[in-house]
Length: 128
Image (cartoon, rainbow, N blue to C red):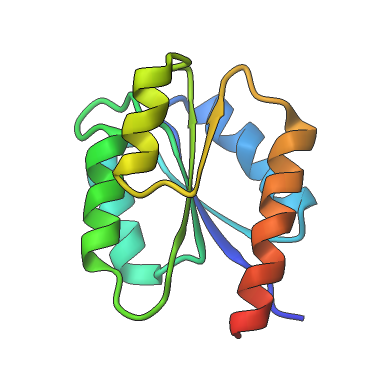
């Protein structure tokens, strides 16, 4: 069974590694980006199945990255999971309207993150 390829975009390196560990526990392959421009370069080079995306990044915000990913995807529907400290309803609605499939907030529940990845991993396996 092929592993889903997951790009974690989080500017805090420690949190990025922590989320990456849960990605690996979920049976997925983990890639990392620490800012928006790196995330877009990595996205374009590896075309991951899933992008776990922070909103507050030092250069481009997660909303803009999500819009660009949606505009650039060709054929393959990338799953975008926003994982952010922005807990207000307006931010959640903005995330979903720019194309996010899920909007999870920090501090995050590892079990919920793993369950969310599992839900989408089944969909990814059906497409392959």
